[in-house]
Image 1 (cartoon, helix red, strand yellow):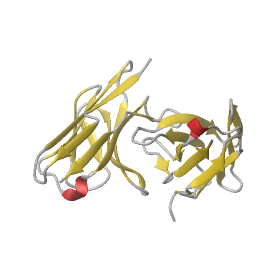
Image 2 (cartoon, rainbow over the protein chains, first blue to last red; image 1 turned 120 degrees about the vertical axis):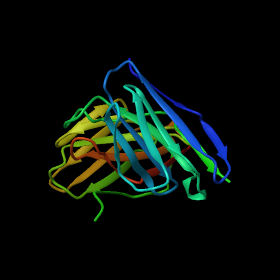
Image 3 (cartoon, each protein chain N blue to C red; image 1 turned 30 degrees about the vertical axis):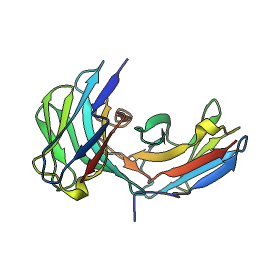
Image 4 (cartoon, chains in turn red, orange; image 1 turned 90 degrees about the vertical axis):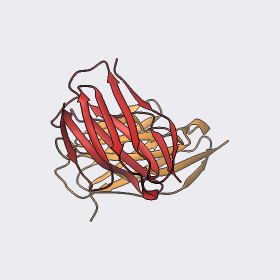
Length: 115
Length: 110
């Protein structure tokens, strides 16, 4: 069966510091991968998605970037964190493209506090 | 107009009550509809998904789609305190992106 791992669970970082959040998926090949941010009362905001190694689509211009160095690894990064980057970050995967194949499954999330 | 709208609640019900959670959506072409449950400080977990119109039942949970009204519902029968969570509806319009509702926070009181 497929599993998704996301770490760390909680992170406290000072303003201006770098960020690296990692997500890996097991039990499937060539998944679609996603990064979301969830703010209280505002739902899920899609940040990036990837349909393959090195292929990244950005949904929202911001202080963050994403990379996919391996088939089942997705990394969310920042060179300098802002206070507004605080939030709950979620990684998700889906089987592939097309109707019915894009049902997404989520990791446990990383709660980031920028102080 | 947002692609999907969801009443944020919060909703409090006594244990054993029937719960109705609802979303409306904007585009009649949408065909895949999902419900996720999210416990506090956890990632969303997929509860159910339905294709096109009609009902789908899984234990105490029933998902219903009314395409004529562009309205989707999740019913929880015999609600339990363990059902206390935020419930997110989601709609799949195309290849990559899901449209999520903002979530309804449900509390089931023992």
